[in-house]
Amino acid sequence: MFGSTIIEVAMGLIFVYFLLSVICTNINDYVARILRWRSKDLHDGIRTLLNDPELTNQVWNHALVRSMGGPKAKDPAWIPPNTFALALFDALAPPAGQPSGLQSVRQTATALPDGSARDAIVSMIDAADGKMADARKGVEEWFNRAMDQVSTAYRQRMQGLALLVAALVTILFGADTIALANTLYREPALRAAVAGAAQNTQTTVSGTPASKPSDNVQGAVAEISKLNLPLGWNELPKDASGWTQKIFGLLLTTLAASLGAPFWYDLLKNLSSLFQRKA
Image (cartoon, rainbow, N blue to C red; front, side, top):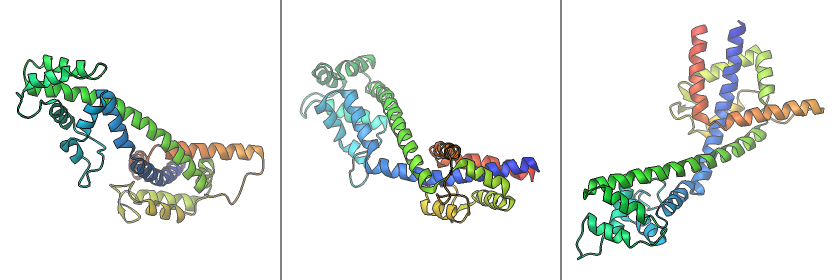
């Protein structure tokens, strides 16, 4: 009985974290999309890699690269390595009417200014021993290594945004983990209702397929509203000890919500399976 109670409390908390994370994840994605962080980071990464404004513009404005931005030719947020390699070699190709081939590309590359990617490109061409496919493969690997650094920087920025958004959403809802856990533990009817709602998430989230748990902000808000949980700011702490506990509870919720909806959804599935085996 005690074990089932603890599992139900855990499921209730995880379900609340999941619903808050749905809201946070969508806000994070919206902000990143509006500010075009992915495309800006990609462009900055290519500019740093090539370290030559003219060559960067030629590659960035190449038809293959622009096509990655969709029908409206927006700045791309992602470029396949082979597309980058093709665009780079096209940018380094000699003008029409002049001999083409890997050695001609090498001659153009040697004319790049000092401090650019000249040495790296020339060394990759030399290592290819006259084979265009091997030269492109070398460029693709070079590009992948650079994009790993770009991806790391993007994730770090998104982690900072996730914490900020999670804090704002937590404060807005007044979601105190300690108060939630205490209430769920003391009230069996509420605990059972929330655990049941959490299990129902396996098939739907307010009418939205659960395979896409981060797509439905309105459904998450509606689900939170109908759970009758101790959320909000109707009752404020009356002393310093109460405020300390309140702030700690809010911090716990903030950290949990910043982990993202997919994390809590997967954990909820695993815990639901455990609960069903105990039932």
